[in-house]
Length: 256
Image 1 (cartoon, helix red, strand yellow):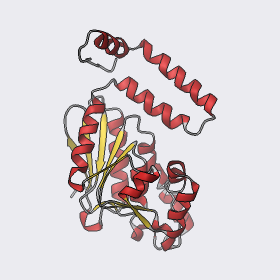
Image 2: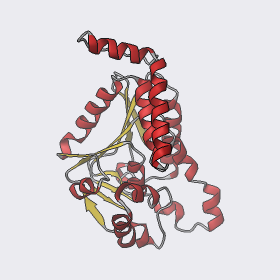
Image 3: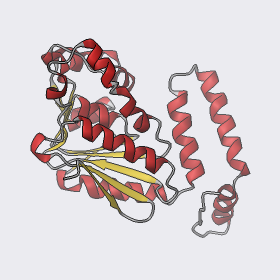
């Protein structure tokens, strides 16, 4: 049984589904490898414009596979080099939408935070409970959470290991949108289809500018934005988009 299922939803949308239901989609080594390979391949697949990542009704992903690490020494953890599996997701140039039902804990919360948009069901739960195991997050759980919700809220979750619900996560800025549990995946797929209809050049520049600019001084980030904005005026899609607006018709973007 594959630990990661892929479904082509057409119109440039690819669905990736975590598939370890008996383990609440805990991120074991084969699943980490499968995710890295899938995102590396999809990055250069021109038929794919947006990726939706989801789990099951019970769990998006309930953490890392503790069995993998329970008896490991520091050097064994170093040799596992788990961070390399996250790189393909962190550097993915196209939009990622996480469709989250149930638990998104530990490595599962870190995985969701790698997405550009998080659609959460009303019953979803988020948290970084690593402190309860005598360790700490090691795949962005301190730094991505800090940047999303601020130090006081991040430290509340990190130091207590407690979970928060979807509505609180939304109010904190961790989640993009909260919908009824049964509407999570349809909402995420619908959003992905809308994004996929836009110019791939514009979408890629928006994502890159936001992610690079967030840690820059404002003046440098504004310069980055201005240059990316100007670059788009050398594309067919810019000319098509503006012509369609002036002619009161729908644009036909080609990615050129």
